[in-house]
Length: 320
Image 1 (cartoon, helix red, strand yellow):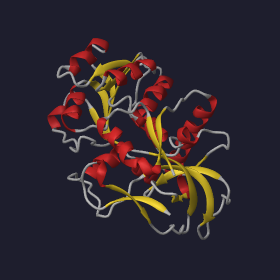
Image 2: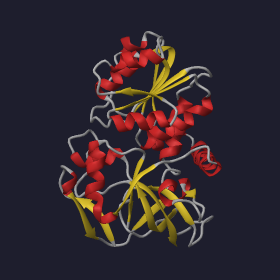
Image 3: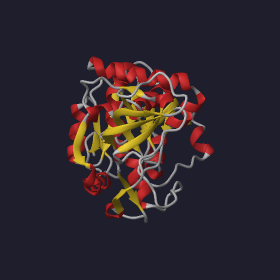
Image 4: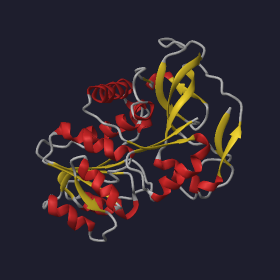
């Protein structure tokens, strides 16, 4: 089968489409023939290298896969060959992928494959970030990178918490307009005084902030948290993981780290419930996942150029 690999760190041009063996599903796994692959911003960071999480070379691209099951691993029950499912794969950009059955999302036959890629990991993560953020009714929430894959879902899901103010940040005019179209206030992150823009919408600061940027952006976001508010960190796409001086917490602020894998280990039933809940909202029309563009697998270099430029509104999809 064809699959994407990179043998050195660098720009999108290091990505290669190679012939590799079709993987074999182990116990508790299924093999799917891939229909659509959702990309994640972190993979562009890992591809560039020089991060705290560098992978050994040659490396693969993770992603959220939708496809039909073609084989079951040993002692795998509850699923059948031919079922259409979605799940997170460690080797996603390929014609076939292995998925763990514990956190698979069932996908209706009529559903759009690109949108469906967001049901197994990204939308559940967005919901979990908001739940952990303890947004009070009538409160305010700041969502960094609000035009991206997780951010645009978080903006929509935040409405169910009934905050008075939802604020999203982005770094281009098109992305700011996109955030406004989702019903949030938009703040230009390229403005050195962007925290002052946030305070125009939330003069006393925000109750909750979601951040996967890290670095200086995290530090500035933390300073915007009200007393008794919550700062959520779930990554570092700037390449710099947050460091938190204790003095920043003396104003009765809380900081919590969230990851999909951490939540699945801590509360697997809760993680499965999140998948079911976002899928329900999607099918009812309450959640509208946005696909920015769909490209052939052979054009993965162009997909990563868009990721690097931070130009996507919603999710980028590849199809074998």
